[in-house]
Image (tube, rainbow, N blue to C red; front, side, top):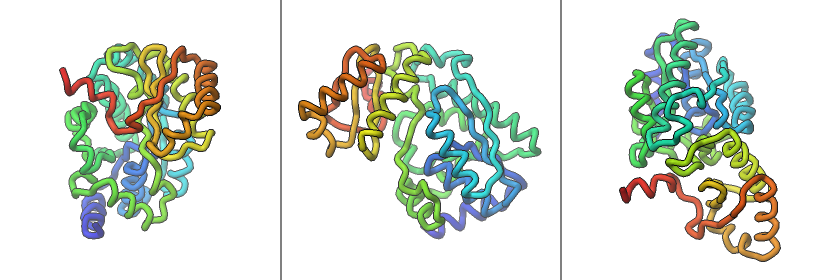
Length: 269
């Protein structure tokens, strides 16, 4: 693991300057930290402020960049202007990621930076990830993947580096909550964000998702919370609150949270 970090720092140090696609998650935070260790002020973190990027995440990204010390640029990004995004086809992530990386490259070029890196790791090679095609097409490097770092190793190295997000749960964009083929709207994104914020405020920790199927909210929560949510008072309280947010129906997924559940239907086609 330490050897992989040394290899990562060595590769980054060989670059003249680097722009890091920076979301503030564990992977991009560790990559930004490594880039700053290797290059100092010659590294730049760049964040796309999209509608599908939770506001809490943006606040966290700004704070984290300050903690690392890396220069940070953010830019407004309207994914609804990207052809194919709102239609929510299985390739949605490809279209959106391509547009974001093109914009990051423009910003990087304005700062004299030719090398762009992003935080995919070795574990990301399994699930359906059309966004990775955009990474390859745009000539963006994935150095964590290149040196073979897995998620758990990145967490341990992040803790060793003193990064506050070392144990942070992953937070995919809000558009990933909407079932494929169902049009994405700004209202659905806001409803999803509000519902997930509400559930976190109840004290639910760990991975959670509010999946959107038209006017139905399907709650994916850590399995240990399922018995509590089936209690009458809790069940009625959550149902009432999510209906206020705008959902007509609320259901609890008895399988609990699992990564890429919206891709399960694709595997049967």
